[in-house]
Structure formats: structure tokens, C-alpha cells
Amino acid sequence: MKKILSIVLIIAFVISMPFIFNKSVTVEHPHKLDIDGNFILNEWVPSRVGEGPDWNYNLKPVKITDRVWCYFGAMEMPTKENAGNMSNSCYIKGDTEWITWDTGPSYVFAEQAYAEMKKIADMPVKTVIISHEHDDHWLGNNYYKEVHGAKIIGAESINENYFGPRHIEGKDYPGMQTRMIKALYQNATRKTVLALTDEAFEDTVEFEISGVKLEYVKVGYAHSEEDWFLYLPDDKVVLAADVVMNGRVTSNRDGLVIGQINAINAIKAREWDYLVPGHGFITDKSAADESVKYFALLTERVLDKMEDGIIADFITKEVTLNEFRDKDLYYILSPQNVFRSYEELEMYDEDDLIDYVAIEEEKKAKRLAEAEAVANELAAKVKAEEAVETAKVEEVEVMKVEVTEPVKTEAVKEEATVPTVPEVPTVPTVESI
Image (tube, rainbow, N blue to C red):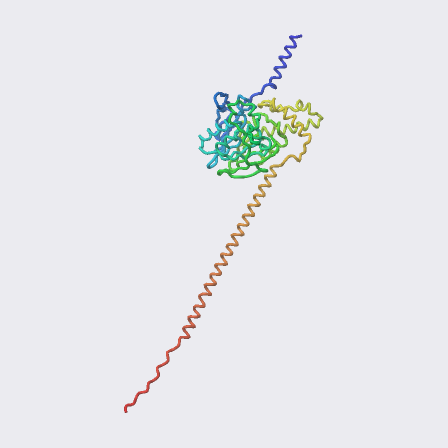
């Protein structure tokens, strides 16, 4: 009996192993990643160098386009072994400065990332733009703030939900201990201090920095409480952050499935050739395909099971999303995504879905109408100016005529009235006596 029980336990352990340990991605058909056609997964070397005063992240920037360079993190959860290097961050090359999109998991990471970018172009970082509040994306802020004097643009939720070092009633207090700071070795986090955002926007905004046109797009409650992505219209690049992931299953622990779908629709409504996800290595036109499919299937299948009367306790058994079993973190994250989606979709309303394509078309039509109005106004102004010039010319011609004719008349008049010299009278001759 004990022998049979032992065999059963061994079999059960073998079956459960995929659920206990994370599976790795097997890349059979690598996608082209950068402008030169290189695929980062074949080149990325995870750093395990923990000795010394600072962790060596072994960073290698990848050229996405002539203007955009990115660092790609491991397909893992944050651990002491990867020192938090498990998300993607980018640099945008301006005319006189670098613009940083997400600053990574620590001061040391940001410092080493900039050192590599300085080799490409020796320019400072004067603007940092942050995608959302999860700390693997912005704990490098204080490096750029302290060393470069950079302005940090980011979600207001960062300032609401985190706090840095404080001075209260004559006493100094340390900043908040985030999950990353708690999890990593001290030589990775030693110089990291929470530097919050300097400027936050209420809605999508367009601006130009160092010759680069940017659109900072708010998608709201999606992967987190407040998510944004960055769009470079001239370069046709989207820096999507965590509203898009590929090669691994997303974490929706703080997000909303409908919000994720809305965010992806906002991205699809724009024209782009390259998209850099928050996690993952695929950046070509197929970069968002996995996220589109995952959230569509998740929503559809959870709603179907709810209609069948399946309760929350059993939803993770009924909805498994087997199509994503080969993706990293599937066994860790997908079940919690299913359960959280069930809780959300109990209050599902189709009106929560936003038609971003229609919104963009409306924006384009508005821009076209405004451009046409400006053109018409300019044409009318030019026409009015031409009319004024014509009138001035005609007035000058009339004045010329008026000035010329009176001169002639006066001349004639003067000529006619010149007095004639009277004839000298005849002097009588004196007769001689």
C-alpha cells in the first residue's frame, strides 16, 4: 500500500511541476526587433554579477529606430538574481538631449543605462517620462533628478500612492520601502531614493522636446490605476509600457480587463511601425497581437462561464487559456488574471468599451476642419490685403492726374495774363528858334 501511495505521489509531483516552476519561452521563429533586424532574445545576457559596491546590470542598448534605443529586461518576476531588471525602458534622441521613457528598477540601473547612451551621443537627460506607478518602471528617477536636473513627467497616482524622504517637525524620515527596494540586494538599491513626478497631466497631451514631437496618451485605469503610453508620430513608434506585453502573460493584479482592451484600442488607432512593450522582446507590427488575443479570449470566456452559472470559486478551473501555456509566467499569473476578471465582469457594461478609432477619426476631422478654417482665413486676409493694395494703387494714379492737370492750367493762366509793355510815346521835337 505504501509503495502504491509513493508512486501516486511521484506521479502527482511530476504532473504539478509545470504549475510549480515557471516555463521558459522557446523561440522557434524569432521576430525582428531593431532597425538592423537583430532579435534581442538571442543577444540578451542576464546579469548575475552581484559583487562590488554596485550591481553590474550588464546593459546593452538596442536600436529600435534612428531615434529610439531601448533596454530589455528578463522575462521574470523581480528577484535578487535579476536585480529588478525585468521591464523595458527606452531613450529618445533629441537634437540636444536624451529623453528617457521609464527609468528602471534602481539608481544604479539608471546610472549604468545612461553611461551606455552617452557613448552613442554625449547629451544630458533633461526630461523623464513615466508610464505608470509600478516601481520596476521608475525607481531610477532620482539618478536623473540629482545628476542631470531632469524634469519628471508622470502619472499623478505615483505622487498619491508613494512618498519619498520627508522632513516633518524637525525630523527626517526615509522614503517608502517599495516591493523592489525590499526584494533586491543592497548593492542594487543602495543609492535609490523615491523621486516622485514634477508634472502630471489630466488628459492626453502633445508637446515637442528637443525637436521630437511626442504624444503622451492617457488610457486611464488599465494595467494599473493610471496608465499612459508615448507615441512618436514622425517616427511611427509606440512606447506602450505594460498595457502591452509579449512572450509572457501579463499581470492584471492591479488592472481592469476592459481598461486593458481600451488601452490596446487606443494604440491600434494610431499609425506605427514599431511598438516597444513593457515586458517582452517583440517590437514589430505583431508586437501587440498576443495582448489583443489574450484579453479578448479572457473576456469572452469568463463572460460565457458566468452565463453558464459558474461561480467565482471555480472560474479558474473552467477558464484556463491553454493557448498561452508556453508563455513565461503563465502558471503564476494567468489564474489570478482570470479570477480578477470574473470579479470585474460581474458589473460588465458594453458602454465601458471605448471606440478609440472613432475618436481618432473625429480628432482628424476636427484638425482638418481647423486647418481648412485657418487656410480660408488666411486666403481672406490675403484677398483683403490685395484689395487694399489695389485701392492704394488706384488712389495714387488719381492723385497723379489731379496733381498734373492743375499745374498745366495755372501755367496757361500765367502765360495769358503777362502784361504787355506799353509803347513809348512819341516825344515832340523841339523846334529851333
